[in-house]
Image: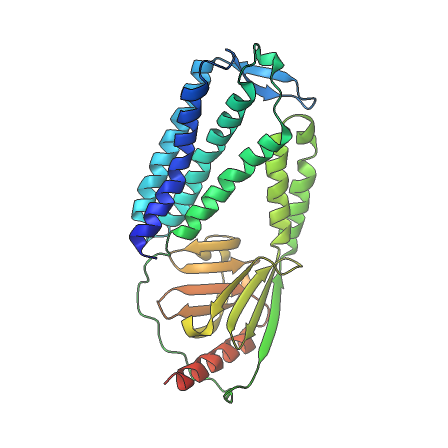
Length: 316
């Protein structure tokens, strides 16, 4: 898929938020009560309203501005900066969340006489919360990684010699107790929100689960390449085929140099970071790098370089 096509598809995803918000506002502007319900209590009763014109102006202003920023960053994707892909995904989420909440609010309010008569289905809130994340993820996946700064160096000689067809495997892990504790604390902190603003509690709860789940990173090196996975179920998983790897090194991984904790994408490349410390760093043939925190990564780097050497030998 060419860069132009990726940018076009990403732009189409970004434009969904303003198009749906503006289209819904135009279609239902005469069928909803004024003032419009904007907040519900735990029992489902309306406890907050806003004038239709004011509510629409504020929401559409935020959505259009965020979408415009996202489109600019989509156009910058593929250059020597990670801001294009990451920034476009973040701006897509910022545009998508208010747009989705605006749409479900107007749809639920259609044909209602008073704001107090409107009930917002639980599934609508769930969908409005999840759809922006899906759109942001799609934009992030569509846009390419930043351009490499230099051509990848050749793999250093390995003391391991692998015979053709010999099967090998190495598995290691890295975990962060702090991330697990942070996820648990955040999850407990959402409990009071369920009695006040339960949509916010739902979003915070999902973030807590994601934080706790990603506190463990598993690295597997085998004949096919390197696979990095998260959580006790080792899912989701990212695989780097051996034919894309130029070399491997055991290095100290500093989270802030790779954009933070979790799965990151920066100008240095991609990284799976659970904690500060030892890690396996792959240099890919296109010049990008892929880092994963793992305990005692030296044998893994040695094995990867041996696999790269065998692949280069057999591919001639």
